[in-house]
Image (cartoon, rainbow, N blue to C red; front, side):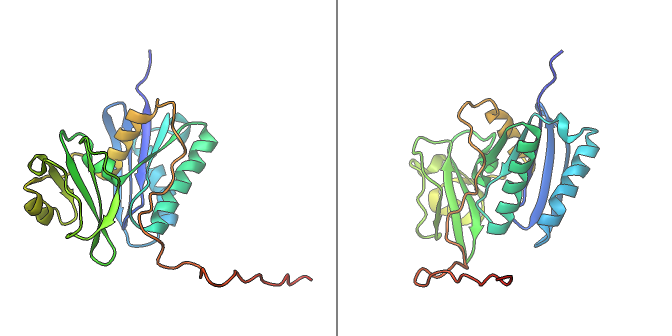
Amino acid sequence: MTHAPLILGFDTSGPHCTAALLRGDTLIASQTQDMARGQAERIMPLIQEVLAAGDVELSDLNAIGVGIGPGNFTGIRISVSAARGLALALGIPAIGVSQFQAMALGIDGPVVCSVAAPRDRLYVQTLNDTSGSAAALCDIDTLVLPNPKAEAAVIGAQADEIAKRSGGRVLTAKYPMAEAIARQAMLNMHNTTLTPPAPLYLRPADAAPSRNAPPVILADPSA
């Protein structure tokens, strides 16, 4: 008897830790904890709690799905690093899923997905249409809307305003974030061109080394 694949999905790209366990099309367990910081210390215990709720071990997993952003730089790195490390140790695929993919999963037709960005800006991508639009950082006044506009659903940050401007309709995501990540990972797990997950960064870091000055090399204290 062939068992349905067991998929773990998790995300720390925002002010939260969230994880979900999927057996085939069935949600086995999930947990979300809102938190502005401390995800690095919380994500592995949270994963263990979700696995325990499903009465499975890490070694039972067939694939891992992980949120790659956009969102908080540090949060994205935490979950992507955890997913890649676990996948390497377990010998299973780690599959990156963007917030946009998670939000649009299970919704027919064009979907304008938006995520709040710093300084009242938006990360936006339109999925499930023929435009092939890329994810972008924009203002509410500069976002690119799908054509024809009226067919689009709108999900996420400032959805009411985007729907008003586009003539679309506001929807909520069909699945919670971690569950959507696990479901999308299940759909992609047999893709022969899978690459290790990498953070989806749509803006430069707030703090970065100066481009005009070389890095400072510290003296070896033992010399």
